Amino acid sequence: MTLDENWFSEPHMDMAFSLRIKGKLHEEQTPFQKIEIYDTVGFGKLMVIDGCVMLTDRDNFIYHEMMSHPVLFAHPNPRNVLIIGGGDCGTLREVLKHDCVQHATQVDIDERVTRLSEQYFPRLCESNGDPRARLLFDDGIAHVKNAEAGSIDVIIIDSTDPVGPAEGLFSTAFYRDCLRALGSDGLLVQQSESPLLHTDSIIRPMHDSLRQAGFLDVLTLHFPQASYPSGWWTASIAAKDATVNFHREEAAEELPFDTDYYNAAIQRAAAATPEFFRRKLFA
Ligand code: SAM
Image (cartoon, rainbow, N blue to C red):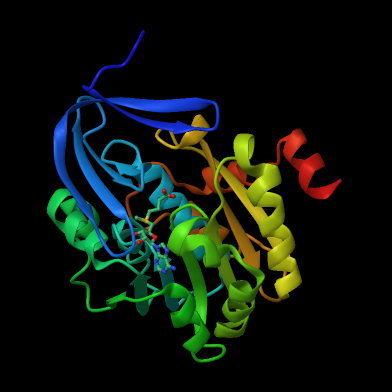
């Protein structure tokens, strides 16, 4: 079957992911990237940055819940949370479900991502007015460099792929600055792409760079994500001064808020390591 103009397609390596669309709702080139919004037939609204799917109405809950809840339940007492990227505000909304979080700062380089999310994905932005939330528009690399040492409990790096403005967010120098900004028990989590496609090119180098920067332990969590290349995605958690543990497992068992994907059993299952992945990372 040949796809016509009624489809959006994201080619990646030797495959492509496509969604049937009703039409394009918006397109703009910001100083940082090209943003497009589509209305799709089966996945609701779709945001695309530089040709790559960022999120759809239908499946963003999995990504946003897996970027936030596992790391927050792995920390003994997360009060100060920093989100780098995440301009669609879906991760921020999940973080603010945790009553123990006192401050959640989101630093996205591109204010237009947030403004368009407010317009086209209002549910993701419904907690932006929470008094604990602070939305800044700045380069996450500079923000972390200038952060007070030991001031942050959890850093969540919810970025685009490691090209363009996000490239430096995958570097040893950036991870060193994150390590310095984290307090004791500090944890970092970063979206780490597809295990099927990017283990050699991104995930293994990320583990190496995090350890070179001084993080003591790194654990990669796996989850399905239909709209990202290969449909299988990861988030990697790095611990400043301990092993990555499920510290607040009991609290997660009694989940005090609603989720659509995350629960304690999902967190345990997501930490299981497939054989090819274990060989490539630890052999
Ligand atoms: N879930 C998405 C994915 O993996 O495809 C990421 C979503 S979120 C929209 C990614 C955000 O990272 C974008 O809004 C982009 O502006 C932001 N970003 C990229 N580089 C950045 C940087 N150096 N500092 C802060 N934000 C950055």
